[in-house]
Amino acid sequence: MKEYLFTLTDKVRDYECDLQGVVNNSNYQHYMEHTRHEFLESLGENFGKMHEQGIDAFVSKVEIQFKNSLRSGDRYLSCLNVYKQGVKLVFEQDIYRLPDNVLATKGTVESVIVENGRLTRGEYFDEMLKRIENK
Image 1 (cartoon, one colour):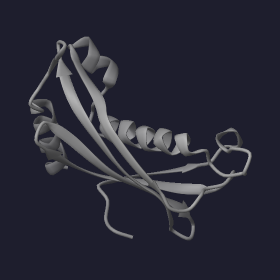
Image 2: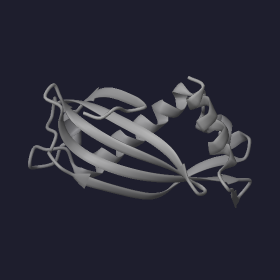
Image 3: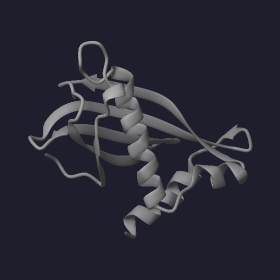
């Protein structure tokens, strides 16, 4: 397994599975979103407070490759790395089944910042990434 900036362990819940007994594809996006939110919280970010300041982060693109299905009760490790590309913050996210570390999904999520209703050049991300470097 490669190195990651942030990881989060969780467990598949019964209601996240479809008739075939595997996690429904849409739930992987939820897992990835939850991981991004926890990562940002670890940096002191809070979407509610950002919004009150007129700053909103929006997902602009999502790509997910499904490799191996998770099933009810499986534990998994949700991992991410992040970098800036132009105005976008790009999250590379992988989810592994535990304990055997089988890759379940690979994803790339691009995010942008809108400040007071206008797309920014990502200056907010620049400041946030500085906090990562100082950790």
